[in-house]
Length: 97
Image (cartoon, rainbow, N blue to C red):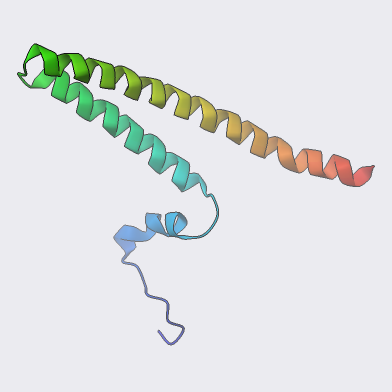
């Protein structure tokens, strides 16, 4: 390891894309998973635990906001992938002119 780089264990190989500069598809997948986990945790807290009604009221609001964030995130990443797929074609068309 003369170059100063440390080797990651094979189990952590998926993190390589997250640690490199730039935006990789793994970042989008990881963010989607985090938002889905957030919705799952809040839903579990709301429906799985016995809490006072004033706490449940706030959890319902937080769950609604989390679901809205999840929907917007998935929509935005879908639109971003469409735009990124169209970018090379637009750049090539610009070169031809």
